Length: 172
Image (cartoon, rainbow, N blue to C red; front, top):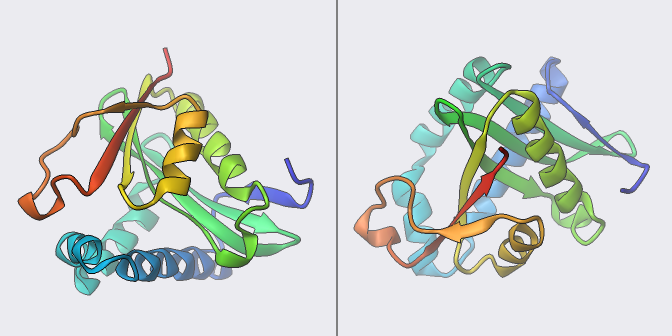
């Protein structure tokens, strides 16, 4: 791992503002995908709903229910990710994002390894997650980390069918 990388749970107003900014950058990235994929994001996370999700994360995703992470590189926030309780014993990893300037540096892999460790530390026995079918770099990373592809673990709107790839990791 790059020694310039570190992971923090955002607590200060500046850290929380950086966490929000990176989450909005992530949403913008998803909206820049091909129109059929961007439509899924627009349906699942219209702006007001996404703002409400971020508000809830800041209050609800605290141990033992979950964890927010900021990736810091040379003291600057360059990525984020979230662990949340999906159901008892099962965590869901969401909104994993690395800013363009930090891509290709190992920050994404290091963040995922930190989030998996957070899931273990929080006592989860299983992780579920999904990503867009067009996000092939993310899929390759999740495959290398040992996630297993599976079918949907929750209801998927018709517009999203065939546009998502679902994963699971047993921590037992």
